[in-house]
Image (tube, rainbow, N blue to C red; front, side, top):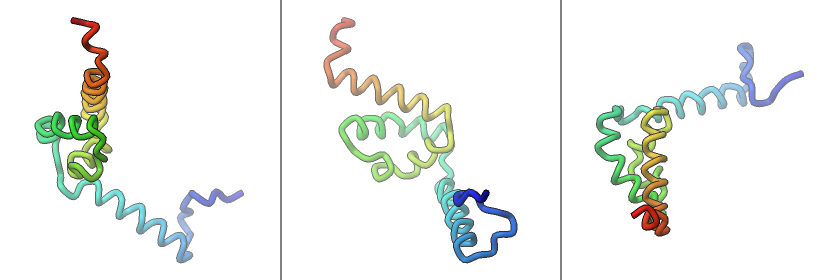
Length: 97
């Protein structure tokens, strides 16, 4: 049985080649700007504030967004920061004071 999402090594069909090209493009596009964790951390608060305000992170700071797609540690920190900002906006942090 053949899975239509799996690329077979001997798949020389136009569709198979197109899937390979698309996959390679996505992989290469992720690291176009080569943002490291330090740079990401420097810009993370700005992106988190934009996201908490409703902006799409992919469009707001695409290089930082691409790094977050690749780095679990930075992603966890970013998600925590966004969660705190959203809780603050909702007034949930006032209860802790």
